[in-house]
Length: 609
Image 1 (cartoon, helix red, strand yellow):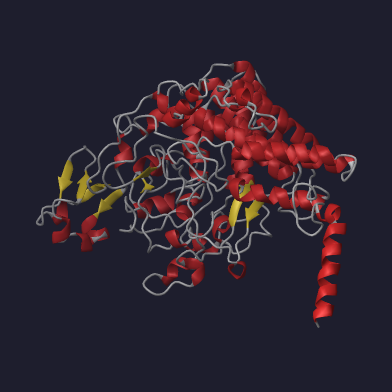
Image 2: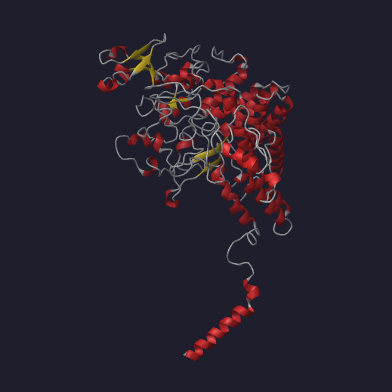
């Protein structure tokens, strides 16, 4: 036995000494940077690593960043009890992040000072370049380069929307390249010109399909390009007065949106509610991209549970938002001919407004909402029926499985018509009735589901250019057509990604100031003795308040229940801190400025901070 063991040891020693060079070679069974970049499948797998950051849907588990309802709650649409959420009042101690986990500055609607995904997309591009002519055909090379450039453009679009000027990198920067690592911020227009070039490459080279309809393709990319180019085009117009750049970016927004619309692949065949509460969006013709959830794969979320009429909604719809909904006859409520159109209580508004109102809000006041107006937009019609009992997993906790629309035709056509309307103010062709029919009127022709029909909900009348609503609340500096396009966006995207970004790019951040927009602090008209008599008890003495039409505030004192009729005032409501135009852009952290200085470089602070 001893002899045999000695022979085995000797053979092992001979093997290791004789194969030293062999053992120093990279493993053939373990993926690393040397052997990974050899196939399209591996590129596809690497690209999937971007999806959770950019195609967030309803996020996952208890995640809220970039998730509707739970992430997008800061704008002039929503109000809470107590003091309203404020913008920053000073630059933060630190703002740097290198995490690849989705993170969002809710009061700026975008990412922190984080360039991890810029580096990741540049690394992706460099590895793709190295694969050219060896592992990739010319067509595959162009497609995957377009994928990487799309993600880089996406990230810079978000960073610019939050910070304005940012350092631009078009390649991976090494740790030793201090002049690049610590370079100051580049002008936003230079950065967005580079983004424009990336997006132009995407539109020319990305595949129209890649194995699975939900893998990134040119139609999906075009939808996002229309979003980002619309943002920058209108920013250039309203903030920088740069008509040349505004035209450039707005034209790309219109062209990208038109690419989707002209394909004939998508249509408004679904009712509005089904876009958000369906367990499977695979067959929905309006949805260009969606995120699928599956309990068996432990991929779930919690957004439906916060729409189930039991969970609280700390931020909920205010009177400013609710008044903005068009009436079913296509008129503003002040001039509508519909019966009770001027009655601003929930029951009458459900019956007289555009169908999206009923599809977005529960039809009776709910104490779970700060303004008593509860949104059930992100759940199907069945979910709320379990109120008072036990919710199945798909409607409770963080085990929800309804799919999330990530990019849909409704946004694309509204991006398109707004870009065209803005271009018309800059010397472009006038918007035609055919344009309105292909966009706003197409949206208004969505089918209604049975629940809406049973309530007597009607489709909204078509918009006609020759007879636009005469809204007495329209801003004097906004043409009637653009005002109505903006209204359509507001109705379409309640609790989604759009509103704060919209008012930022339109240079309308003043909408968040209650001194000029007093409807921010009000809910709908309430008749508490009829609508919620259970609230007329001792616990509400000194807390429950309504505001009459003449502005008089009535406080419940325990004996004046019959007087509690008026616009609801959320409890203890007070204004957010005063703010100035500097809040259009976020400050960088003091620590980051200090880090630059310690290396002998300068990082410029955001103007006004």
